Image 1 (tube, rainbow, N blue to C red):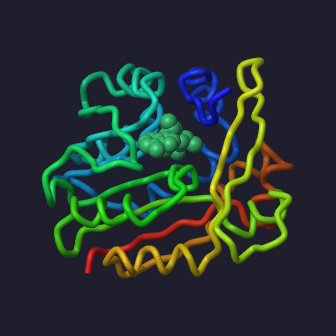
Image 2: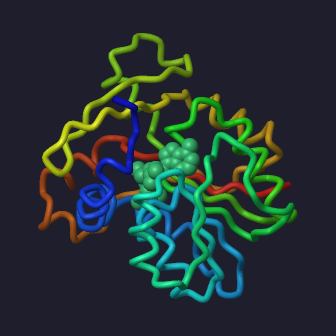
Image 3: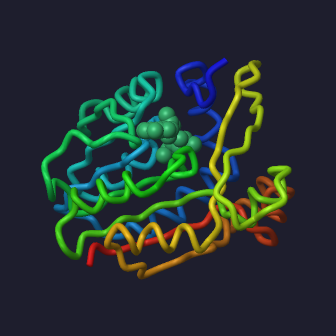
Length: 231
Ligand SMILES: C[S@@+](CC[C@H](N)C(=O)[O-])C[C@H]1O[C@@H](n2cnc3c(N)ncnc32)[C@H](O)[C@@H]1O
């Protein structure tokens, strides 16, 4: 079975992502707070999934384009956003189908840990932004994925596999761990200056709704958030 086949579980993924502790009460509020005011800006949501993030910059007055490699996830985004965003199939491992400086801000939520090499995608993001444009992204915290990966050398960049259960199916997932220094080096080599690194706390409402997840999110690294500027 191919790994990371989001088409095989798109509806189940989106339904879970919509309301769970990790996405709805932690990742989305945290990254959307880093995104901030975007009225009048051209925003690319890279790895947009079902469009739950994209809906917010649209509400805030941005012109949003979403790209994703999964046709199933793009269909869900299409239904959610009802023509309010331009949506395209694209693979972040390849050159992206846009002119230089097409966007003012690029948002990439929980997608970069699927990519074996960040150098090409970050150079593409850099090309698509004007000087001063921002890249805001979240990714697996390396202190979260390394202990559960079964690998012994934190300092290597390596892939590891998991099986997710979604919609009654076993789904084969493959992620890429990279140590902190590799993240910082990749951003710098692509021409970005990091302005924020964030290890946020969850929405306080998660305390009552998801006590176990809340305890985990308030005591253990999960995702890591960056805001970086094209120098
Ligand atoms: C964990 S989901 C995150 C979706 C959304 N950004 C969110 O945070 O709710 C990962 C998404 O990245 C997409 N994806 C994975 N690898 C990709 C690639 N190489 N190029 C484009 N999209 C990719 C998947 O199809 C999926 O929609």
